[in-house]
Image (cartoon, rainbow, N blue to C red; front, side, top):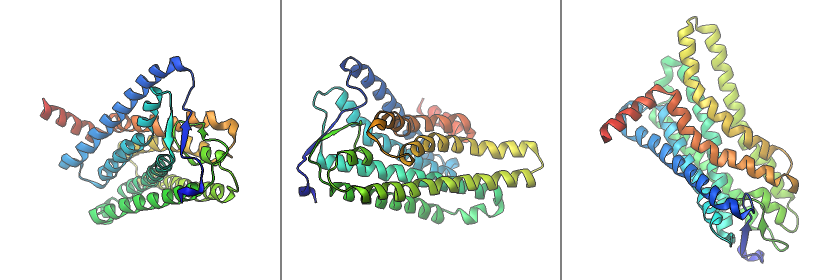
Length: 308
């Protein structure tokens, strides 16, 4: 499969070629990566260790935190290495692997956010049947399903991209290996690859988004027509606020990147948008869930008290 190309490595040109900015950017992104791992790791530890958080909502939140740690790890360590290196190379196999895990974790997170929205829908609209519908077996099956679909989707892109010929250039105008920049470098016909990116990845991204909107539409309709207490309405909506904020932060840049047509003039914009959903969103998720969720804040205080 790899012998169809003469390129043995790619050069990641990164976010900037201004040398004086490299140490500063290294410090900034190192701090972001450290906070991402620490924040999501703390949530993951709390969900596992605190019996009060052993519920479907926090089971999926633990999956989200695990995804965010891995998602940042796919791109940030290589970016940090390149800030301090003059030879910003990545091997052909390393590039395809990075592409694979980026799409694997990204598509899995998109689908997981839809599962979390469904969980909130059942909890609010069908509270008496919640424990029956969202039992441990169902939650585990739903989580495994989105991980497996995400892996299969990424495998499709990694195989199809690895079969392309790269002969003209090996310079990637990005800080990590993604399908769109690689298609710009490929020789020969890439129509099938672009169709898969636009159709399959587009569907896999937008279908969960519409399911999320549908879930929230039913939640809002249910609350306004069935709930006559303002305090109950506020409590129900506040439980969804954190999730909806995460959805907006994740989907807005993703939609902007993958829905619009690819062009070489949009590469700089793509990098900025990619930083938003692959770097900024994972570091903000723990902060959003900690500030907006009393149970998570309570679990965090208990962890801190035990550690002192």
